[in-house]
Length: 351
Ligand SMILES: C[S@@+](CC[C@H](N)C(=O)[O-])C[C@H]1O[C@@H](n2cnc3c(N)ncnc32)[C@H](O)[C@@H]1O
Image (cartoon, rainbow, N blue to C red; front, side, top):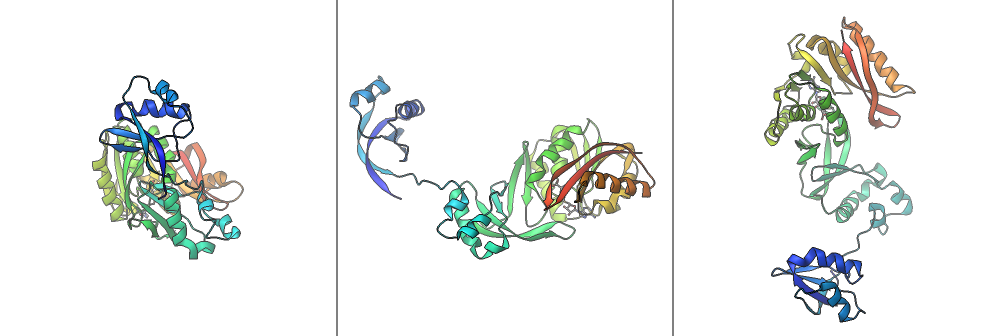
């Protein structure tokens, strides 16, 4: 770290914020250097070329000391990851550097295109230098796969771990990316559904993952939520989150196949957030719902009219199960799931 001899001002820490602001306003604070703290006093680096009277007029009657000492230069962080990588990658490669990343608790997750795979490590380390607030920088490895919807990760920088506590809308969610599905991009959806739930409702979340919907709902409403997932690790994480939050409602976690949930016509509301497989479980959801119960159905759809296609598909599946769509209260795209493909949600009442 580079250091330089500079003029300093030493004041009691009690006056620190007021004086820092005043010095900044009068252009006397040298912001390229780090302010030091020593024995309850702040040592502030000053710009050169001003009269002592100016300092007197800014400080007023408070005690202070001046002199000269070495100060550390604050490193000038590059503005973006691509800018920080300019010395390592070709202009063509720089075009491919990720512009965004997922932020999950204290973990950053990058999606590095195959063309840059040989530069993964340097991209991860440089990302960490630009964004020092993360404990861990991971890269996605391969696609999400299997019934549990989990993918692998490679640690590029920081602590080699995949578990963290993620906070969304004040809900503390225990997450372990290598063990159970979690996406930070669904927070609006988690909150939207929780707000629709009424007091004392009976809700079944057929594919709860780490339990984001159940925690959001139970934090906001005095409802009972049955939370099912086939992945035991997901339910372990939900059990952990139940201890991390002050909940109004009650959550009943179940490890198992949603098809095996044997209750019939008990739920006011059923959540089916398993977009790659929910269509296989529509008859089970209809069986679990009370008459005129609300279904939140998620699907992946492409084409020119993903919303229309999703409604047609759900309508047919509900009819095949011997029920009907009484009303479609909402249909919308939640997010892009692939190029030209969307995750679509339908809120519908089932008769
Ligand atoms: C997209 S994730 C759920 C995400 C979760 N709703 C959220 O918002 O974070 C789908 C989940 O369905 C679970 N799953 C897959 N097949 C299942 C089945 N037959 N019964 C219950 N859960 C299942 C997976 O383990 C996975 O956690």
